[in-house]
Image 1: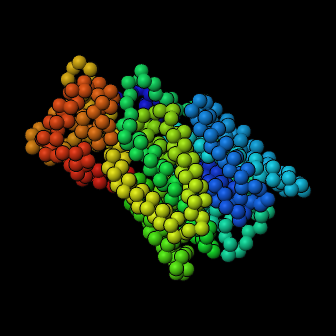
Image 2: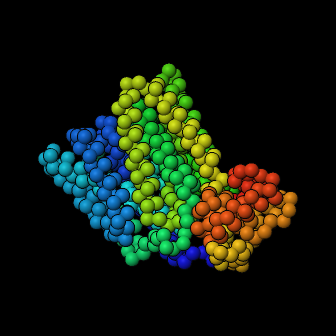
Image 3: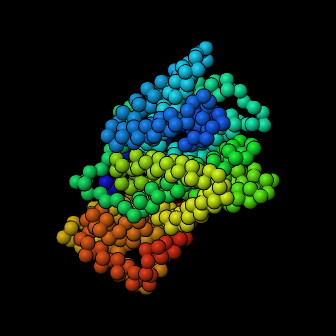
Length: 486
């Protein structure tokens, strides 16, 4: 059966309805609609409302990120209360903007908005990763985010100028809806994290690849915003296309069974094409809005990152996963800022740099995709009920409740083997397709390391393969069938 910690955490996960998720998604709308794009001055993540000083905003952004990461590492159980308190402070500062304040006091109220937003960024991700079921996370990151991005597009609709009073009113409404969501969340429920004594192992290389993906995908949305700002109506088109494609990904999942994981490579490839058009638009301005539309679609590679965090936490519930993802995003922000300063007056070089990163992201996803899809589709079915003891090379019996999913991929491997595979060899195959290395398999399964190596050699010989990735070709039909059934 699943490890007790994994079972406990699974039972804590929440299934939430779309209206409540839309309330939560107002954070993204507030962040990108009010805080980062309400003026004309370039800053770390976008534009800031004047008369705020960009340097001060940068300090607040850095401070908010760092404090958020510290809370997630050392005091994760207070996150829901921290969200309630911080959103309340942001709401009070938003209401203060309607008062006849001096310029200094108005600036102070806006500074509070900035700090609260950046402090809450990590907590938003933590709630999705730590508390949402996979289905709830996918609904939130597609259709709810689609609504949020649509609102950002409306706020940035520079075809018809939106008065700053509208921005202030929207901020109040968004924060009220967010507070409704935060007060609906349970406060005494949080993910239990693993200790070394718990006998769980992490697929370290796979996790490292996911974190690297997070950094790279954050570049796409940061760079996309930066490019969109340079074109008339660019920000509006960027977020409108992102909103539309979020809805498309949701409909593909609901109507055709194409899980959002399958959209990663497509959206990033489209984003890469957006950077190509952005370079061309420097010479042919008519291509500028088409470039922004493609970049908006590419931004979904970043919006869907918490879904990878859900997968990581369900595989190995480390307390460093959630802060690690936010830390990776923070690193992307810092590098993005440095690149903007370095190439601010050489747009061709800057856009080519963006393009190289986007193409690298596509390649990275193609490397990670088989492991992610197998883990996503078979994680629960592929768990073992009675791990073998360290000194016994006995086959591990699979749980009866796992159902036909396990038998299907195991039978597929058997059908492609030149000699019958043992239960132990099939166990090792499952771990390998989830990204585990030999030492990690031994720690996770309790097979002795030498037994793992022996089973692995036999597996390769019987299947006539030479690399772990070749295993996926033997289960491809079953994986496709599982995708279609979701």
